Length: 381
Image 1 (cartoon, one colour):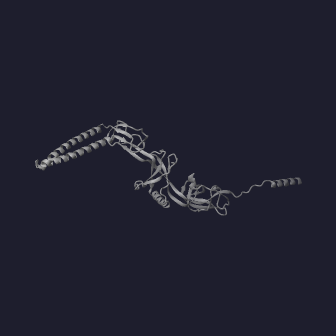
Image 2 (cartoon, rainbow, N blue to C red; image 1 turned 60 degrees about the horizontal axis):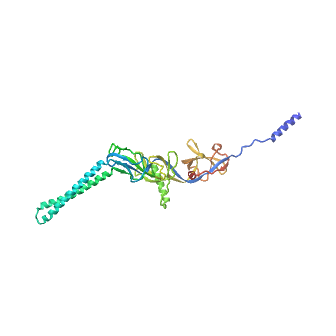
């Protein structure tokens, strides 16, 4: 009996000296300190690209297209010969006009000779006044006839010159809408033969709603007041391509249409972008990213700090005693991966950043203060 008691005592003693079960301690939870910053409100719009100049090449006279003197899709220089139209009919008109000029000159010489012969005779009353008046009138008519014939000749030469079509600007030219031997210059045959575009600067046109336009104008007025001493505007419009890549050069708004389209309720706006590499072509669809407003001293926090429950948004605030407090907030719009807060938080508040499912109201934690990137730094990256 004594041996059994001694054995039990030894087992109890050994058990009491063994490792103890750890107690639950205070959890370390990442938190951030709420800060304010000036947040640009950026909107994206779908736009279409145009050349700085998109000049239509037209046949100004009708006739058969004789030759095409350029490489389609290539670059052309101002004054380069592009098309020739069969000049034979126009050469004939020039020859006909030249013969009429010659006839008019001959009539004028005859009329001047008659006038010079009748003039001294009229002074001595050797001829009737009516004969003299007829000589004067014939001279005037012959002079006018010569001027009309010369004008007709000039017009014929102008029409003849239109049989050669030259590039109006330097740029890139597209596919020809007519081929050699086609009859051009009159409907239903092609009137616009081609288009030459200057693309060292590219234009992008997009639409703003009436509300967005008012926001944009108000923002531009504010920015102009702040930067009144600047002589030039800094480009601040971004161009995003269909594959998500960004154009390396920023642009500026250089044109706003005069009226809002009543059928769509939108206003056409144009931005211009440098295109020194000439990679952007007219007709591309791209996104415009523009600043429409600026929120000064806005409260901004990462989206992952926020919970949404039945349409209401809330965060977990850490008090000065390191206790968790449940707080409902009112959110604004999202910017990047941040959320603008309208009410419920202020600068200096500490909120839980991660582990929202591990905290509850009234719980005491050990906060680990964590820095988060601002919107400005995020965009620069």
